[in-house]
Amino acid sequence: MGVRYISGGESHSSRLICILEGLPAGVKVSSEFVNAELKRRQGGYGRGGRMKIESDRVEFLSGIRFGETIGSPITLSVVNRDWENWRERMSAEGVEVGERVTNARPGHADLTGAAKYARSDVRDILERSSARETTMRVAAGALCKIFLATCGVEVTGKVLSVGGVTGEADIKARIDAAKASGDTVGGIFEVKVSGVPAGVGSHIQWDRKLDAKFAAAFMSIQAVKSVELGDGFANASKLGSEVHDEIFIGDGKIYRETNRAGGFEGGMSNGEDLIIRAAMKPIPTLMKPLRTVDIATKTATTASKERSDTCAIWAAEVVGEAMAAIVTADAMIDKFGGDALGDTLANLKNYRARLARDYGL
Image 1 (cartoon, rainbow, N blue to C red):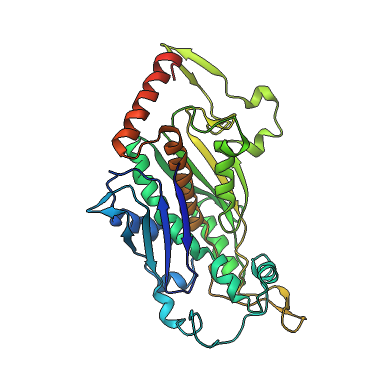
Image 2 (cartoon, rainbow, N blue to C red; image 1 turned 135 degrees about the vertical axis):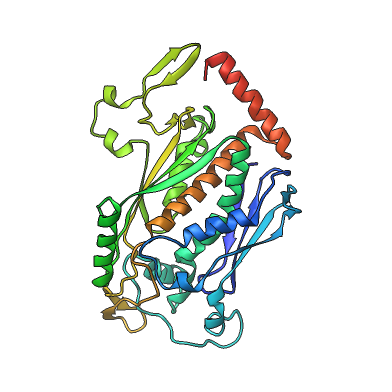
């Protein structure tokens, strides 16, 4: 069994929680590091008013004792400070209070979710489909980052462009212009995973392919509409001789001079850095609402407005790092096992030694 993660909670519920299972016992963890990652998720130019209310801090509820994992499921909790303003409208019991949201936003889960779950109030859908849910992905991903660091694996990321432009001044101008017109902008970010040995993942079955797991994880991030591994899209218009990373040998070591594949071959890591890029569409909540239909009256109207961001690409990048960490931790545990950290690291050390001795990798 590898690493499993599940979360619960709504955007304006009392708290968000998640359970992370599969990390070996003996990993030294810190709430300070998790809180720093949560703060990163809340930053970035173009964020909205919610970030002025919330200051996310994690609470460890199980699976950690005296700053160390003990092998049991880890339960994490983050309190929603805005809950006090929503206590009646989001109450788990009692009589319904507050106006229903019936104006579905184009580009959001509102209309389809209401139809699927037979809800007359779109809030029953938007509360969970909100990107507030990613808070717990980042918390769980932070613990996975700590575990991966003990394995010599590092996860980093960066924003590449916003609204089709690059450079700090141009990006800020693009966001400011969108905000002034009541609009939103998206962007592209990149995540890099360094230190994963060759052979993690598998070519044997479709659901064991490491690249497929990364693609699924990144596509699950709210507003992400496309993912590429390495030079994926650019490679489609090139010749094979221009795309594939040739293999060389020198001083008894096998190496490559390029990494156009992004570290993935045949559903496995090939020893190079894993490179994943994702394109995030503009957030669908606009201060200048788009046209839609009221699901209660079946009449034309404009979309509802929730407190929102003009641009959240920096937050998406942090979430991308978290998802990469979760996927990588799962793949490493699946490959090297170990209920105790020492066993995992011993297996990893032996594997790295075999690759170096027999294949020069």
